Length: 301
Image (cartoon, rainbow, N blue to C red; front, top):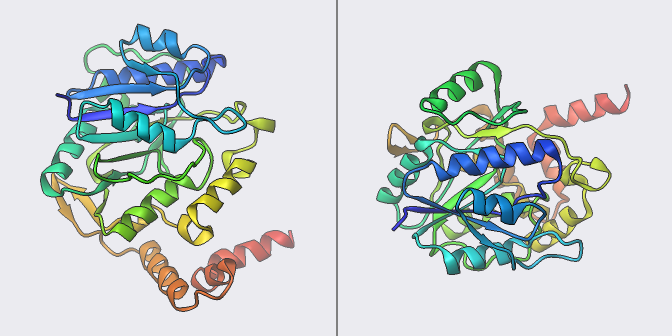
């Protein structure tokens, strides 16, 4: 029986670059030990790549009015068809390596309920990866020298036991808000939120937004507004990797060291609790005066 079931809803394989990076990602998943893969949806080219890479394909995922998969349906299908006790929703531009499986195994040994996440490394990849022996070491070396660690505001995967996240709203995949809600949900439920950034390298293959309407980033899309509404409002999507309760370091869980960013975040959450009746942006401006100052300067440029 596998340890982890990875599930994802890829984009159509019509854009040449998107097709390359999605195949790179899925192929890297199939090379992991103790892992099974489920691809969801009926996008162009998905059935073909699923057959080529010998992974499970479930086309009947529920979608919104625009034809974009709903995360609630993705979770349900993964839960019903997974052969493992650990599930992981992941974007189909993320390359995984064996350290990901080891991080999951270590976390599982120490907690019954948890969510595992981490910061990604952004890196430009425009051609198929050569998955011959030693590919992981070659990629990690170039990523560390040429890539960039993404800020903690973005989350591209969530790994958790089947007992967690049994009541997911009808969020739209690929739009803003739902990933922040995942952290909020875990914190509200009292589950450990484990940041595994110190223990693994997960690579995000950079791409544009040509697959979205008007080529705008996902946070400018109307579906993002609906995601925010379903999440319960702006307060529930403010959560980021900075709100992790633990870090996985050298195979053990530890409390994160307090940084200036984390201190600011704790202040912001405290102020939101005390002054819940104030507008969201007012609390943010109080907690993050430097950010507010930058906004003012930008207005008068």
